[in-house]
Image (cartoon, rainbow, N blue to C red; front, side, top):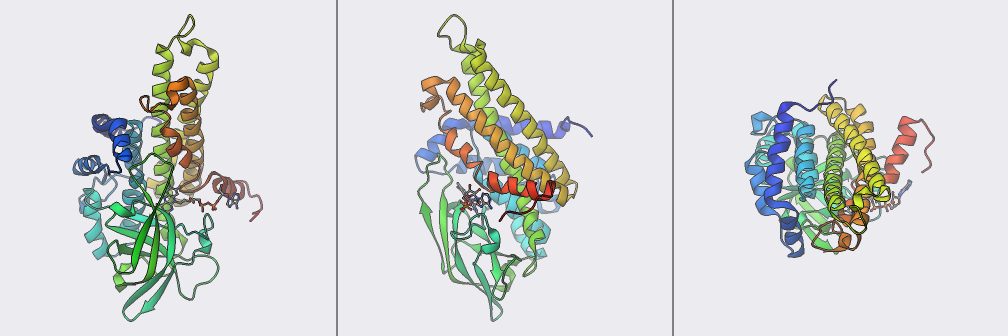
Length: 384
Ligand SMILES: Cc1cc2nc3c(=O)[nH]c(=O)nc-3n(C[C@H](O)[C@H](O)[C@H](O)COP(=O)(O)OP(=O)(O)OC[C@H]3O[C@@H](n4cnc5c(N)ncnc54)[C@H](O)[C@@H]3O)c2cc1C
């Protein structure tokens, strides 16, 4: 076991950090406030192979693992560009298609994920089901040689910039525990519409309600098996949690870096404010929490890439919880350290509050992770 990342991984981090620095937070926030997308950054990251580091080499990707993709996501977030669609498109969708897709689906989609030329949104959340995915009612009905898909999803990120959406549904006659069927639906398909949700997060990536009104799909829109079971879905959800952890870690690093720089420099009494333990200790504690959380995220990625899906599931949940908590503390203390400047646009700390707060809610909430750990790791009875 080594706690030092490989030379290759460190080189990847350094290269991505350089790219991130060329764009930075002012680019990201500028795009968000102008209602525009981060297309330039996405395209360049794709061209350089960073968005496809985890796609198998035979499809034009880097042949690496989720640990590599998480490193890319973390470095971009640490540079001020937390790209939500990285968590969805190359992590969840590409992984599920690589693992469960047909040869034709792999040949069509994976080279495009590898160079970032397509994005695919991912839709599981429904208004009435929320955290309880077993209650989803989006239904796939066999119709002739294909399918009719009906239902509604909410909070789906990036539908306006996606080429397609991977929908999680259940089959017509399925009741009770979810055995998900996954469908790729191109965004222009008749019957599929989306409406934006007004959000209080500074992000170029928007959230949408998706309406599926008897959307007619060919048979081969199905990914994996009909009623395929949770395993094929979790092939994508563990990477999602690892990526969310990486994004949280990056945001935490960004906030702490800004806070430490400010605290070294700003002087209002006889010493820089960073000399006061009232500021230094909470920053130090946040740093410790963040590094511990990063370790768990790296363990989760390592287990996942080693093929231990069960071990990765527990570690990914723990990492997601720990990085979200650590990142929230980092951002909150960074705002406090900056005093009034913590809430100005110029210092770029206050705008992190919304996105970092999201980390406690999505893709899986803090409470649902605690439920999971209580039940699966501690053997406690289920309360719900
Ligand atoms: C910005 C953003 C982007 C998103 N992007 C996507 C996306 O791309 N695709 C997608 O499918 N979804 C997406 N989501 C949805 C996200 O995954 C859900 O918001 C999240 O899973 C929580 O579901 P909910 O909002 O319905 O909350 P609810 O399930 O209604 O929960 C509300 C509160 O109750 C708590 N709670 C619920 N049940 C229990 C319980 N048994 N024990 C203890 N506490 C409980 C929750 O933890 C939470 O605090 C996104 C959400 C946001 C905000």
